[in-house]
Image (tube, rainbow, N blue to C red; front, side):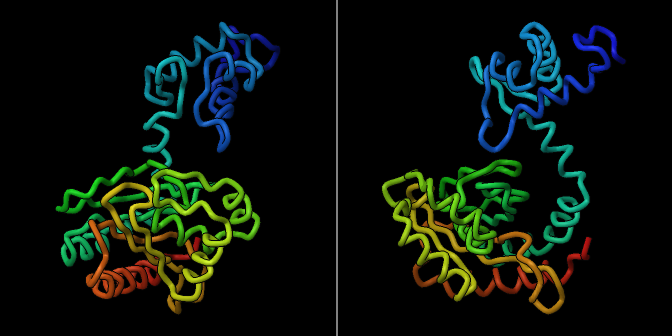
Length: 253
């Protein structure tokens, strides 16, 4: 296994893992030279390993840069926490979709982003930018605001220091966002209006683990529609019922 290793005792597997470890929250897209430097590998070795990882969809190439491939997401879904959440939530997502015909989303926090675990596309023409395995900013999405509101204080502060503008309606004022997050915790739901995509609004609620609704927030459940308007009470009610059902059905790890 250690054949062709450039350092004594460093196996092919360890060098491949080093390539993958070059990626993190702050380095989602890297050139081959950057990967080699962060993995402490010769550039020729890095090129060879990168090519092999791209060939099996563990990495993906975009121009002269590389990102984590879909195959890692597929494998990640086999982890007990994600498998359990998706399996438990699936019938509840189907129920919400049947009742609303809107796009249903289930997300968890991944660093400073909302990671979409599952989604059912609605019948409307609303532009929805996420897919299962995709990530979007916490501060511009309904599910993201729920997750950010219930994130550790240090995470909230880090996100608030870098509120990027995605559309003209994105909230980038720190004080205003703090106020919104406080209301999310008080009211139990979050909303957005064209903050991630023009022509799309969303509403989302927390999924709280445990039979009594007093456990940790483990996910966020949301709907995306053209506009909330008079439909807000009905959509919120459907989400709250489903979120309670998911939370009560989750088994403690």
